[in-house]
Image (cartoon, rainbow, N blue to C red; front, side):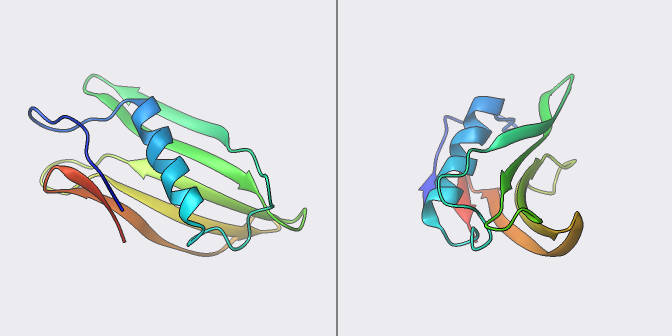
Length: 111
């Protein structure tokens, strides 16, 4: 799936735009094996600098109380493209994760 915002120069999305991407990633179900059915995302971190959104994280509760899935947006210094990662936790310890989306060629690409 590709989500294309309007782009004029260096792309720095708004928090709302990143939440839309998070929602689309969650809807695919591809990276949500440990997410509880009907889980509601909770924003846990937001960092903004002079250019705009730098970092944004959400967490979703897992099927078991000890499980949690975290999606994290990060903007990197050019030329590295902004990315979204997913990480899986059990008992507050990371047990896996991967890149799930990258902003390239003017659009978000799901990996």
